[in-house]
Image (cartoon, rainbow, N blue to C red; front, side, top):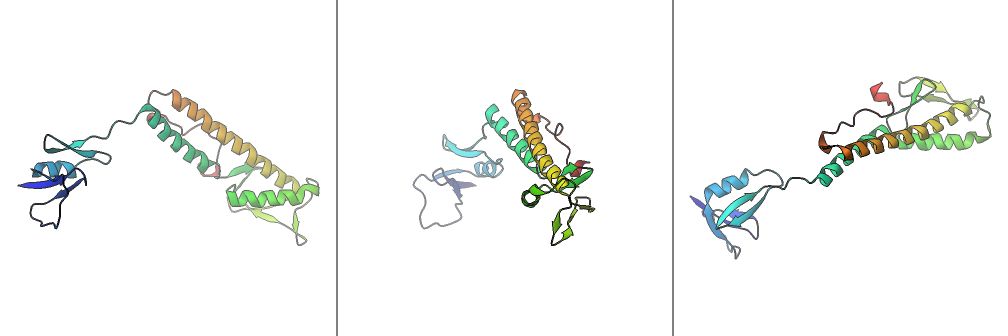
Length: 190
């Protein structure tokens, strides 16, 4: 049994169906060409050679493409780790974007306070919930330590990512490069 194929549309047109119109380049091909086309892998394409539909294998990725793929994975890990907690004075503090904004705002308000001064809102000392669930009373000094620690951790995280990038670029097989170690500690791996 045969079927029809159009390279122009990349579609098969069964002989059992009546179409009001067909592409100009339609050809009749063996049904096995259809079966091979349906079994192709993602990224493979179809072509017509000597009146037959053939599967054209997806070209192997270049070294530059493999490096770009792995660098993308490293950046995802970097970004995940840059918001996965920061250890300050024995407590893990949230350092996602919303938390950082809150800490920066508190640091700006605490600029006139001494380190030991409690951080007050409406006359009450603020107790901050840590990633472990414990509450820690805030002082101006602790707020500054947390904000400073965020910056230090961010720089260390980006430096680790760039170190991994350089090592991955030098690796013979960038996809096999293991970038799972060498990062600053985060809450979920402690």
